[in-house]
Length: 436
Figure 1: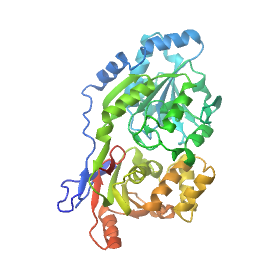
Figure 2: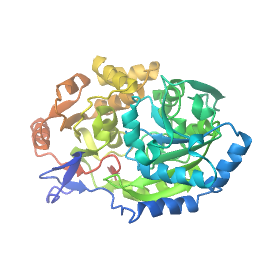
Figure 3: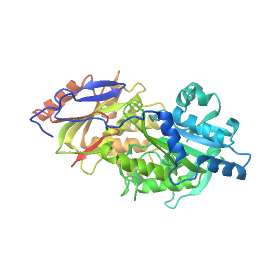
Figure 4: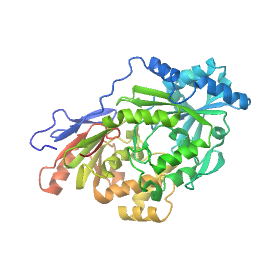
């Protein structure tokens, strides 16, 4: 951080728009990722050269020969991920057809986890017309969906998965690879191990005692107990193939790999970690954190940016500093059971420490892990939101609301009694800042 000179042209995402950040001392732009010139060709190349896997057609034919009455399920993320799902799913369907698998033997599972379920119109928008018009799609919501018990992992996690996914002849995962607070990076097996899992599985893997275990950290795959447990969960399912993508700030695919889910994920994470994990000099008093769509849709998702900044071993923010989340939050805290419980836990606590202590003592229910990690951030820093249409409800959660970035900065200056050092992070979900 250099207080002597301001970062010219600093800006951050706030949903679908960009907010200028005047007077920032430092600026971290989005990763310079080049969109694929021909996305269709990029997916075709990925499918033609799978990582550590036989071709998809061979896997599908072999699976259906063993279980001729079963189906192939394509597991895709819900709308909380900026995934090029229509593009990928369209190519997967074409590849399956070429291998002799007809449309009526293929279904798409929308991995809701504990998020809200989707409507038929939302599923159509998620998949695109050329896929939605040809194959059926269903939600895999961990509370409402029928589940199959697949046993217990070595660490003791119960493995319950949506029954239609568990019964498939073959499951193909679709996802994006980006930094993730618990899994290290998203993608890989997560589309099934969490997206299609039951509430007991999600609650066990996300309980505070587990997500706080050594090795469970952002940017780490190897030696990460969370990631290892997801691998064990997925190994009990028919997941055998995945297509993972890296996207730019506009959601355009920049890199794609297909094949073994874990190997494809690791390859993409390794190739991009330097672009995502950014060392900065010194500490600042305010981090203005941009939150693009779709994470700007609700506080449950947008708060990831605050945890990425605050829960680092070497945070770039000084103790008592302010994290300013720029997000419009059209759906408030969120619509699903996890999102609603997350907000209720924060609003019902006298202080963040109470949520942390309770989380270490007893289960917090759906979405409780996010309340726990946000409370940990609130114990050490202030959190504010700029851009929400009606921010009054945020105060009940211990979060400030301001109309503009300038207002949030002025509040920090009044509290400090001096000019605050400000770092602007254009996309704080894929740019993780930490002290060098």
